[in-house]
Image (cartoon, rainbow, N blue to C red; front, side):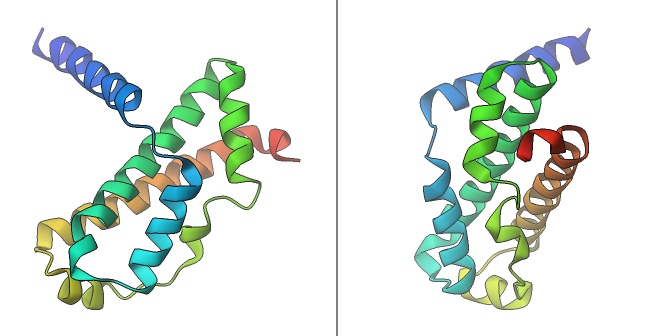
Amino acid sequence: MHFKFLFILLVLIKNSYNFYDRTPLKVLERRIRRNIFEPQKKYSQQLLLDTFKYEIYLDDILEHLENNNTDGLKMLKKIGRDGPQYFSINYNLTMLQQVYRWTEDDSEEFEVYIINAKKIWNSIKTNYNHLLR
């Protein structure tokens, strides 16, 4: 019973989040790259939030594609066949921790968002690569 309630609550939170705050994809991508390449302490939470939003965006694409919703294809085309550009960035986590004064939890959160986003992207590429041509 609790799991069903928790699942419904998470779906509602995710949907309300998406409804109220849909930062354009190009803005997210640009800020993520900038805040990894040129970290400034004042953008510490922004980088965490943006990587989280990007993960949610990819998850939305996958969900739309799985449900044969054309919005998924529109969203997918914004990313392009090469995938998110920030995936190819080699970052120094220790340096980011120092500049942003992240705790271990913050660092782990950042890495989990990127790992999850990569997993979702790999699933999209594996199952819907034909749409990227």
